[in-house]
Image (tube, rainbow, N blue to C red; front, side, top):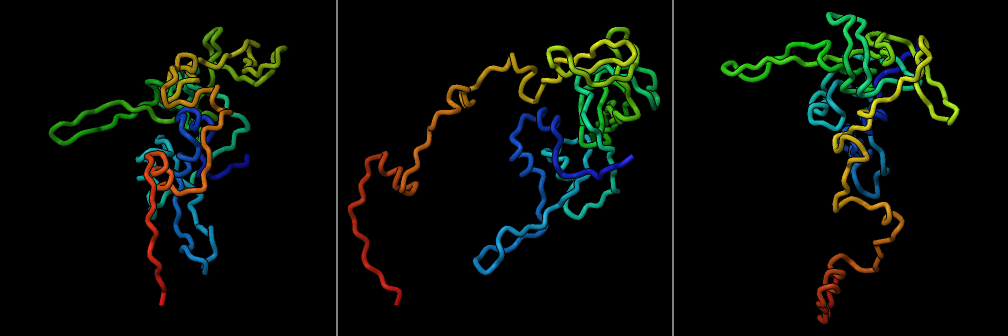
Amino acid sequence: MRLSSVLSKAKNWSNQYSNLPESYIKRATEQVYWKNPKGPQYKPNTEIKRKKFNYTVDRSWSLQFQQENAAGKCHPKVWVEPLKEWSYFRGDRVEVLEGKDKGKQGFVSTIIQERNWVLVEGLNCKLEKMGTKENTVYYQKEQPLLVTTQVVLVDPSDLKPTSFEWRYTEEGEKVRVSTRTGRIIPIPATNEETRDYKSKSTYKEQPKDTLSAEVDKITFEPKLCTFEMEIMEKMGIKEDRVPAKSYWY
């Protein structure tokens, strides 16, 4: 089976959960090793950027990700099996196929699409230590599971593991269907959850949000003046002084 190495672009479901502009994620992630100096004698827009990153459970726009991928830090090469379509979502009930929790069922809490990983609530945990020698705290931290080999989707009709495939209903809606029972496996409502809201329907617009009615309205009028001249015009300040002539020789 053909594999592809981990590239630097954050995946679709990671971007949706972050609810951040793609330009910000790109700026927070990319690393430029070298670029041309500024000046007319140099060729413009020539940069050497880092193309491959080591993806972990930390999101690509976080400080932990930047520390993990600091310049000069080496990591073993990682290969990720390319999936034609992502089929696991937050809130799905899955069954673990490997490890100490083999046979147990839980709900997907986090998706890390860049590595084909999911985190399952309370399963496949590792004991982590936090704090100092005097004040040490131990806690259970979920470890990632591969969606290709380590978890399987559970049919909600009988709570048994099943394979599935994508099909279309008579109305043209694309759904997941259990190949064992033929029943539709709906996408959980928690899949809409982002860092900002639990669901789109309950989100309240804020004063700085762009209203849908104002999207097509032009609010900026360009002027042939500098920022200082525009401020002086709004404040009613007039400049009548004539600058003295100056010569370069």
